[in-house]
Length: 131
Picture 1 (tube, rainbow, N blue to C red):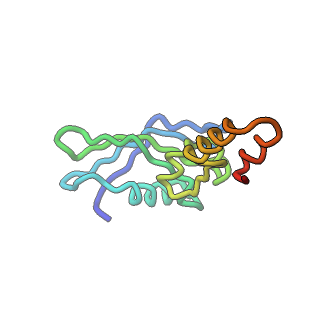
Picture 2 (picture 1 turned 90 degrees about the horizontal axis):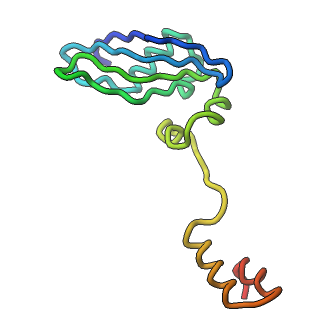
Picture 3 (picture 1 turned 90 degrees about the vertical axis):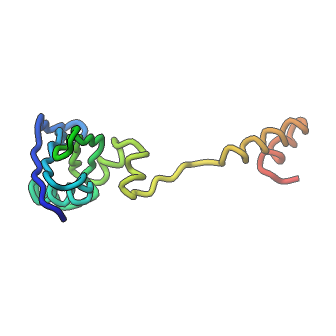
C-alpha cells in the first residue's frame, strides 16, 4: 500500500437509495495510480463501513502529469440495497454473483424453429425439446 491522501467532495447522503455518494479526490505524488482495493480499505476505515463489498468506486481519471486522480464513490448501507440499485456490470466487477434467468440466445432460436415445423398441441412438445 503506497502513500496517498483521500478527500471526499460533494458528499451526499441518499436515503432513498440507501447510500452515501461522493466525488473522491486522491493525491498520490511520486506514485502511479492507486488501486481501488486500497482506496476502499481507506474509505472503510474513514467511514466505519463494516462490509467492504458495500463500497463501490468507479470513473477514475488521473490528471495530466499524474499525482492526482478523481473518481466517484458510493457506500451502500447494506448488501441488499447494493444488489437492488447497483447496475449488474458493476456488481460483476465487485465479484457479486449475478445470474441471468432463462435460456440462452441459441436455445431460444432452436426452440422457435422447432415450433415452426409442427402444428397444434405438438408445439408445446417441440418447445420443451421433446420429440
